[in-house]
Length: 384
Image (cartoon, rainbow, N blue to C red; front, side):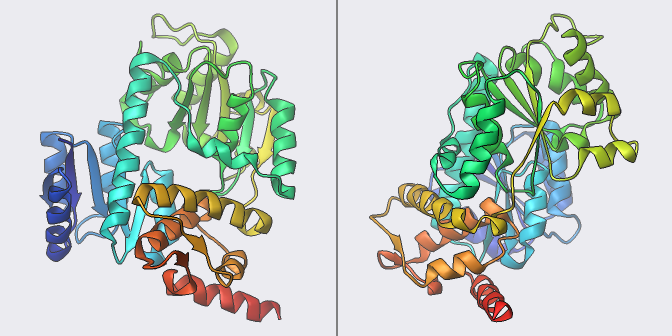
């Protein structure tokens, strides 16, 4: 039975979630403060953490950082208000698997937990076997919209080469999907594809997490492709070590470190700006920047919105074990006129919740967050 650590200072919420998760077959431990959460994490690591974004004595993101230091693959789900979408996206940058917006729907929480545990198990299995796991998200780029075609042309151009690539884009815009496609279309496609969230690397264990024998990310990715997500968050020591790998295939202080890895990097800020601020190695920048790709935010890819929406809808129907559901005609203009500050993560979560809440075979504006509907309508009025 999987163990879940539930962190929330709302006793009623804890009681509700505890009862539901226990019925679903999980072993639940509660922590009602940041201090309690630290004690629980120090005693034993759970299989998954569910944490409210705002606690009385500590931010949920602070607990997230500490949990990730203890185990980088520990799945972490944030509970948040819908108005805190951008803060939730920051939590995902820091390593959270996903967020679930209030008011909580138990079926949505159930599906999110299932996805989180499956993803963690795949990561752990890949660490043991060195085999890359196929991802559903790579199918997103099969669409034929104008923006997809432009992105696909860049991916087709660089994928067959051995060039290192920096991928730019806002949080949640699809940088990881683009990286997966580059790997999938490369000569290394049968070898591992490994993602390193540079936000979760810290302290004395940082280099071990990257280069340690057998368990280090570079060992797991050997022969394949490694994505350094949020690359500007690498420490100076890690930057020097990565540069050494690209120049010599080796890292000082690590035995059996003879790496053949293609490196992709992603960032939501200009890496060159980080170089100018002396926060990033200029030599490493030039090494990684053989080629760069920009993934536009969802608000600039209106033709793509319903493509992604239909894809997420199919996934949500499967996860919720429901029959066929479709979007009503009046949902489409709302989706296309909303700005989607959380990009694909926000779109997917909105659809997951709508699938759970709808009592019919159709998702209508009434199934969507009121804030989204209002913002989309206001956007139309401003344009007029």
